[in-house]
Picture 1: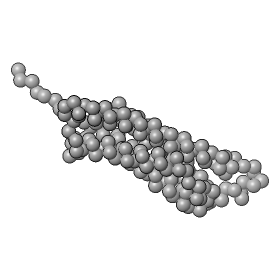
Picture 2: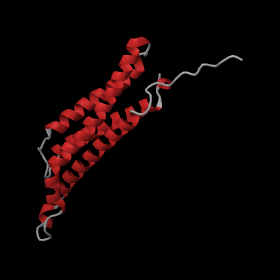
Picture 3: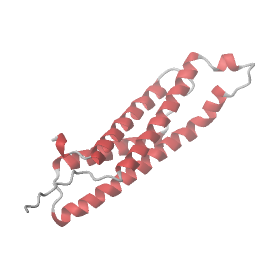
Picture 4: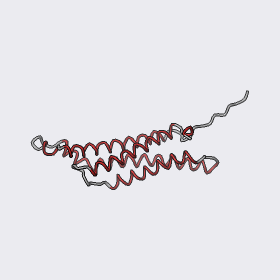
Length: 163
């Protein structure tokens, strides 16, 4: 079954894993004690969930559907457009999260030296680090999905020509 996977499918699967990890990191960052505790970002959450569902659908489509005939060609085009849309959603989710967290990150990392010790507590630093890690993983997943758009989802079968 895995022999069907082309480089494009493997990169899409990697993008799915990166998206899933960013989803986990997001929830860790929102639920741990610190500066961003309880501050959910609905746009990032929704775009990440849609991206997870879409990339999982692309991999499942590659596994179980043989693209033959006109319907297969149309579905391949739809899946390629879906991959581009997933990439846009992932990068946009990272941008939304960064926009929501930038003021807090600036407050934590760039405050006056007189109050720096009271702001840069271990809990606040962990919360800020999780926000940064989540944004990085979302953007990496988006870049991986962009790269996967340049590759086919299926290996092409070579036909030997008899001489």
